[in-house]
Length: 132
Length: 132
DNA sequence: ATAAGAATTGAGAATGGTTATCGTTTTGGA
DNA sequence: TCCAAAACGATAACCATTCTCAATTCTTAT
Image (tube, rainbow over all chains, first blue to last red; front, side, top):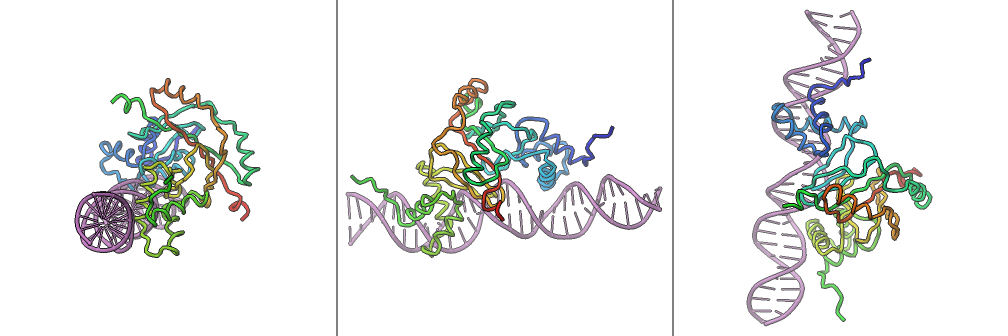
């Protein structure tokens, strides 16, 4: 019954850093978070392993905000709220579908495209930034 | 009755390059498009003027795809289909709202955030790439 | 245990999109 | 015309990300 992943110590730490919160960190944020406990960690290693996670389907990109790509360990369909001031990202509408996916068929018939997924982002000012 | 913008020749050309199609070009695509007719155009000027357009509200960002920011002259609410192979961007659902904006209020009450806008992107393979 | 080969890593160089700098040119009033 | 502001080209700087490569660490068969 060996389902445990066979990750290297650093890969495991990077994966934990991403999955241990819902902050949707950038590569650099993962790096800064781990630096204290793993002083000999290289930023390149963080990027390299995030690429691995993406290929494995364990992690996906939320998008590029403020110049940095942000990552999400929750690959199920949900939306995000992005603060345009501090660029914090919050999960929204977990479990509920905000759009009727019959729109996929409409787009396919109108444009001849093959629609595979969609993303919905909300933008505004988060509570913290608003309370300043 | 002087509503004509007072754009410099190059600013006007850059604006025309963006508004004359629905391709949602990147800065570099604008530059390459104009280069033949304006040989002494600088890429920096393209970036500079797009920033001006953004500040004026004439143009907004569609997002960063394949490492390049893409721009849209149509600032009304609509969605986009992005081909994950060639990164072409197509307008979708012009005129129709795909989500119930009452969700704005729900997000605001649940997270204390101030929601100002949203974007919906569809991803897949466009007709051209599919027909290859 | 051990050796060979594969996978992983750190350090730093390279890349590429975007922004900033600066000296020059152009523009638009007074 | 004259002057200040705006816009420009060229290029350097910036910064997130990717790549390179030699060194290190795992795997696994023997």
